[in-house]
Length: 247
Image (tube, rainbow, N blue to C red):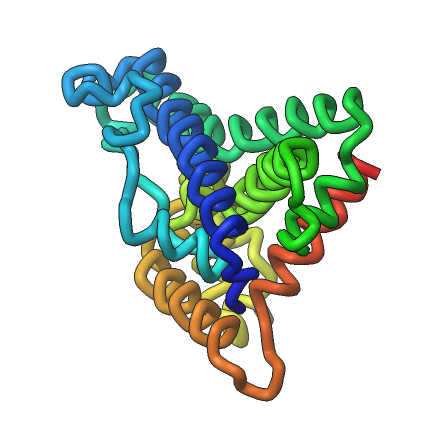
């Protein structure tokens, strides 16, 4: 679904997403480096310079339609001292950094008492007549987009951070073959295989997960009977968190 395409709104979105993306990717790289992966440092990724991290197409997509791939981090569990825990920490650092930014700017909005004004000014740029409503809209957008990025990146679909988080949390082996009920082994073979080797099966389903992700994008963008999966999976949690933080 397209966002408000007023020039002021687009400029606010680009600025806010540039900050949110930079902090997000820096967090991935910094924590990975702390966990033993030297590549982020060797590639000059331990910086808050947005030009190092930005995905130009994804940045514009997010500002206009509400989602896209903003950047990437060259991190790998194979280069870390503790591959499972190190990778979990590095991947989770991205969305958690967005949540931290959202909380910080929400507290700032509450402190200056501009939460409601920011909400209305951001969604109706015609109300921006001087510096105060512009600042309020900018602060609100910092909260809104960082909350949305936090929720979006928890989706357990490849290549989103949430998929990698689930992979890091799942054990390599869980139940023995004899512990799985016979009816599950016979009737629900994929579930049976998953219960025996959760992490390995999750990794095997990576491509299928990617196709599901692409399918959800098309369903959310194209007008197929009003179906909007991302509105359900992302929109509702995002506005629930906004309500909690701002109002």
